[in-house]
Each structure stands twice: as C-alpha cells, then as structure tokens.
Length: 161
Image (cartoon, rainbow, N blue to C red; front, side, top):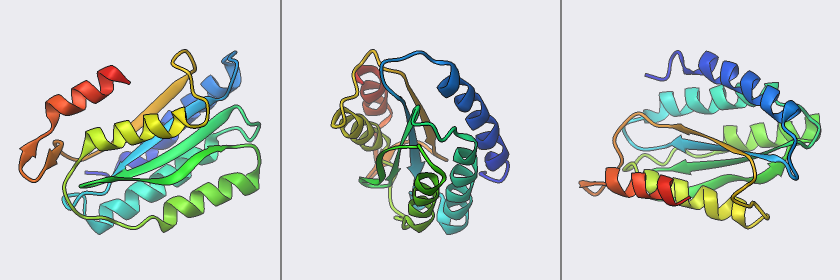
C-alpha cells in the first residue's frame, strides 16, 4: 500500500521545492503533512510513511520560504511538528527526527480532525486565507470513527478551510 509511496513523495517535494523557490508571496508557503496513524496502516506502513516524508522534505530549500507542519491522526489528531520554517540543515534535521519519533496510534481514521487541527495550527502563526499552502494527506482508508462514516464531515472540513 505505501511501498511505492516514498519515491512519489520525493518527486512531490521536488515540485514543492520549485514552488517554494519561485512563489512570490508575503510569507512562507505552508506545507502540511497529515499522516494516517490508524490501525489499518499498521506499524510497518507507519514507519515507511514516516521515513518517506522525512526523505521527501530533504528536497526543500533551507531559506525560510517553506514552513512545515506535521499532524498524525487516528481517533484523534496530534501535532507532531508545530509550524517550522525550514531555514537550515539543523532545523530540517530536527523536523525529521520529530517525524521519526512520532508514535504509532493505531485506532480509527478521523481525517476531518486532522484537517481542522492543521488549519487551526497554521492559523495560530498568522496564516491568512490568501497565503500559499499545500497539504499532503496520506491515508489508506475511509474516514471512520467508531463505525461512523466521516466522508461528509471530511468534505465539509476541506471545503470550509
């Protein structure tokens, strides 16, 4: 399921790097990485997903033009990495370590909670609706919480953010 994902993530981050270095904006580009930590992902795919994201962000410029935020989600959502400007190799290494250290949660798939938490988190550092943002949502399944289908709630969370 996630086995070919790492190379796709690296390719996506090369594209993101081009956006970061060419976009003329008042502030940094916010890059959100929302990582499914539900039980169906399992520990092996969680590790693969974490490693893939860590490798992918290696392509980002270290000039402060990109700000990354990592959120993991299962029954609830947690911020793994608060909004962080990638402005040096040391900052990048710190973000990569935080992603590597994030625990596997192993429960349901509360996708709307992850979307809302990401938007609330970047809003707390001054994100404005006209600012640039890219969000990568990695999931293996349907949004569910305690046997309740969250597809409509996920669509609403995306539409209102």
